[in-house]
Amino acid sequence: MDTIKFEKEEVIEVVNSEAETDTQSFSEESESYYQDFRQTGLQICTDDYPGQFNFDFFLDVTEMSKRHWMYSAALNKIYIDMNRVLPIQFQWRFDDIGLLGIKNLQIRALPIFANPEFQQLSIKRCPIHILQDKLCDRKKIEHILWCEQNDAIYEQNSISQRHSVVAIVRNFVPCSDFKTYNVLYKFMCKSSCSMSLNRRPVHVIFTLETLHGQVLGRKKIGVKVCSCPRRDMLKEEAIERKRITPVNTFNKRTSLIDDNEIPGKKLKANNENTENKIYELPSLPILGKQLYLSTLELLHGHFLGSAVREDHLIDSHPLISMLADLISQVKSENNHVQTKYVIQIDNTKII
Image (tube, rainbow, N blue to C red; front, side, top):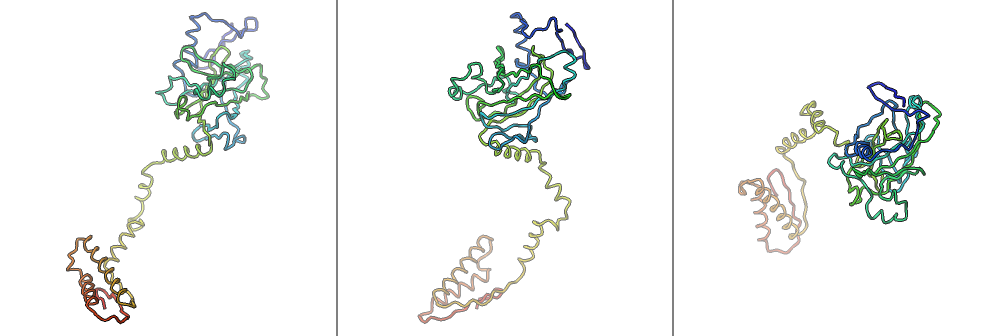
């Protein structure tokens, strides 16, 4: 067995051609330890780790469809409808791995809850969607994430109960220094399913591994499975923009403006000046005693209410007393001849 050391004391064990085997057996004790501390164990790492081989993935935005799936670069999050194909292109530096003699690798996809308080919980499909696919392969029926690769392996950690799907990369010869490998995925439950994701944020962690589970690189992305990917993406992006925008931005900006240039203050100053200005209404001819009386009563009620609201003495309000006198005068008339009356308000006078 050859051992090659890289920078930062990273060690990768490589099996030579004489001793190479992809089906190495473990004892029960070593298997238990392996299951507990591997990428799907109880304690897992969620931080991005490109590793020595610059592991990464990208999405072809030209393939996006607002009805099927969308990607938000601002949130690093995928919005996708249930049972829709999501193509992901993985890449890593091939030359360094080739020097180790490693021919076969695997890409693991592990869904986890984004919030730390829920990360210990395993994610599986809701009972309703399981019943809808009761005729499918029993190995993957509980997995929320499916891989379209025929030889994909569906695993469940016996200790943590985490579900993950593994895509095997076998003897793939790249056409450039960076190896690109396409994998198609589907999400088989919605984020709104009450007995599954239950509207909790979800991450999917992709890891580049050897066939024995040694992690060579790690990358994560947020996922929301919904019926309207574009609508939900725009909504959450707007919420995020509002969250990161400083609350005092407007105050800082307006504090540099002179008080006289602030629209609100200018309006207030104008109101104070106009309160002391005298306006004259034009003559208002009114035909008929009844209409004239109704008009007087309307004006009297208005000024009376204004005086009460402003805590003014009613007797000190000249318009109120003048209107009251006119109303009494009109009511005392006994003639029924239609006369043209004129109301003219000049400062505080009514003629």
